[in-house]
Amino acid sequence: MKQFSSLWTLLPGVALIAGCGNPSKKETADNSRQKPNVIYLIADDLGIGDLSCYGATKISTPNIDRLAGQGVQFTNAYATSSTSTPSRFGLLTGMYPWRQENTGIAPGNSELIIDTACVTMADMFKAEGYATGAVGKWHLGLGPKGGTDFNHLIKPNTQDIGFDYEYIIPATVDRVPCVFVENGHVVGLDPNDPITVNYNHKVGDWPTGLENPELVKLKPSQGHNNTIVNGIPRIGWMTGGKSALWVDEDIADVITAKAKDFIVNHKNEPFFLYMGTQDVHVPRVPHARFAGKSGMGTRGDVILQLDWTVGEIMNTLDSLHLADNTIFVFCSDNGPVIDDGYQDQALELLNGHTPMKQYRGGKYSAYEAGTRIPFIVRWPAGIQPCKQQALFSMIDVYGSLAALLNHPLTPATVAPDSRDQLGTFLGKDTTGCDYVVQQNLNNTLSIIQGAWKYIEPSDKPAIEHWTKMELGNNPQPQLYNISIDPSEKNNVAAAHPEMVKELSELLELVKTG
Ligand code: NG6
Ligand code: CA
Image (cartoon, rainbow, N blue to C red):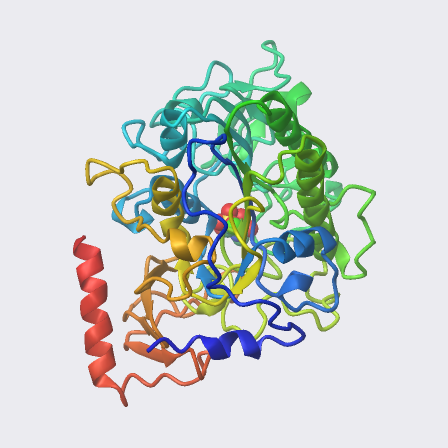
């Protein structure tokens, strides 16, 4: 028996408004009307405790709350991984990232890590006649093996894996190069000032955080002491491309405008927009409109900025009368982290705010806060608003949307790990999936089935070097009853050898595919 009902009631300050399980207005995209648009908006490092609709009281996120109130709000949804690159890889390919090498946190000059032969979720939408776009944080690499050349048409890019249009941040905002790429070209690049990027040694003569700490406006707390761009020392070295450098304070405005343009340009046909925000990843650099507004330092301010972004997209849909038939998914890529490498006073200014809620660990971790994410699905024409307690994983988004479109996922190599969980996704079915599998920074896997969570033994470090985050690695098997112990305080593996056996065997079955 599934025992998740208790988890929702554990969330402080949140009332159960309407349960899921009511019949949806419709189950599949019929042909009598246009297929629903899909917007998949994935925030970066946002915690399940960071939003007022999930019980946060020290910060208010009215736009995301409105989205949640009009949609299916999940309380037991997981990302596949506790860092960005593998999490996004799993979403777009429908394959667990740990099945493929090189899916760890990608440097800014990584090759495109999704094989161009892979049939991605974007390919599926394209085959269904959708206009497809990728805007914002990408972090899945670009170009061929051996490093991206940012001075010419970058191939392969997202257009080789199913997107008609891209306007992307190649990796993260704390990694060079600090430029946008639009359809394979660095935006605003002067060919007489070519970009050089290196992740092994310094290139050019731009100052670095290590050599010129007096030049930085945001000091690193861990790493982040290579090339200084806009006063912020980054990971990796770059030189050149001065006219193309982004302004950190304007990134939210720029990518929100591009996302809105994409929606407007495709308002008369079905579209799929994949949008990754840089918020709330480090460096947290809010626009002046948000700076100082949260009372919680820049980490709080960029949560407000993120909420504004969501509001802008919602308003755009409203103004075009598209909201009704647009499936709007909002989620995070992995769990939250407080100090992730810059002295931004995130910890000192928390003021009792709990990004991780009651959950153990955070970003990088095998514990709950590593992968348990806020997850909201709004589709006024197709679903009833409700609170969804069923178990759900981002790995199943692809298979569920394929089911919605009656799109066959064949051969079996297409989205091999993604299951049809459409009923759960739409809030119609409250049973949820049989199990979910998660991965931490070190590829240690855990599996949740019903009330039980098993974390496989691992000899990897117990603590992440920089952040001091508990990684959940332990040479001994770990078993938690997360229904009665959601904070994973008591490892009950010794008391329940039969559950350890059952779940470790199930995990081995998943691994062997
Ligand atoms: C880590 C960075 C961290 C962040 C993370 C990737 C240091 C000390 N830490 O290596 O700041 O960039 O990588 O985050 O460099 S993710 O959300 O994109 O996966
Ligand atoms: Ca992330």
